[in-house]
Length: 430
Image 1 (cartoon, rainbow, N blue to C red):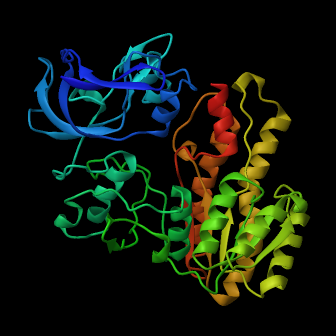
Image 2 (image 1 turned 60 degrees about the vertical axis):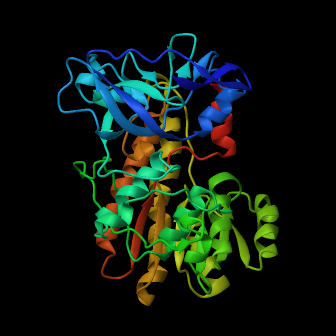
């Protein structure tokens, strides 16, 4: 078969390689499309050490089963599938209790380290255990479908929202957008009447303990189906974004400003906001910098009063301020725990409370809390962070119910890996 082989760092070659052997519990998938993940880009140049040549990369793909192993049941040739990138063993203590992310024998498709090499899906065929397969709801046609996590969500979303069966028949690449994923998400949430965090399998079934929600209508342009900044007009709206001295807060503040909103930007050190304030004002929007320590109740109250005094109203709140401490559980101190929980969870609640008091009399408001994959899954060495983000998820649903009679929206915005200074530093250490 043909495959794109990483022969050495920064050198790929399209070459003939042996077709993978199919194990008794595996399926051979003819790859229809394979995405290029950011981790593949970083692996290409050797910066992560997790794409050691020679290797066939690629872990976000979809295709058709062309062969199944002798022990396989429930799957057959012709099934259209995608698959998890994590190959877990299914037998260890963690797998048996459902914590597959902690599997003792965990491997990742398209990854090679000093411990293992597992070829991926940038090839004509890939063999994967059927336990990691996900059945696609319907066939997806086209020469270049944008499969991968976002493409699959987009493909199944119209069915969840009650659209016609044909509405998700084709998954097309999104037209280029100047907004990163988090920017498009926050402008969408700011324009929605309501939204909920949800976790859905790719076959469209709802997983226990989650809530499905309507999705916004997407515009169609010459470039295909996609979300753009022009879909959301926030002209005349005022948005607070906490933690805007860097990273994610600036991404989202920038997105809101480009959609027409004027901003309150906050940081523990007001002087750290000067450069970002100038950037927002260069877009033709107002940006009022305010000092805020979300761990200090009085600081929260002062910020809220100053924000209302600056604009006379608050329409949108994005609770972005957060922190993390990375340590094994046995090394986490009392102060470490309090720092993370006070910032991420207690701060989110009391900032929401302070701003909601201004929203309720107007019977209008959007409060957007920032979650994480750790709102749903637990990972080693970040126990306090996982606890805080899980708490934010539950808090968001509670506040959505509590305030539903008064204000319009409580949203948990969840994304996976977003490239910020903090995440880049973490990847570099690994």
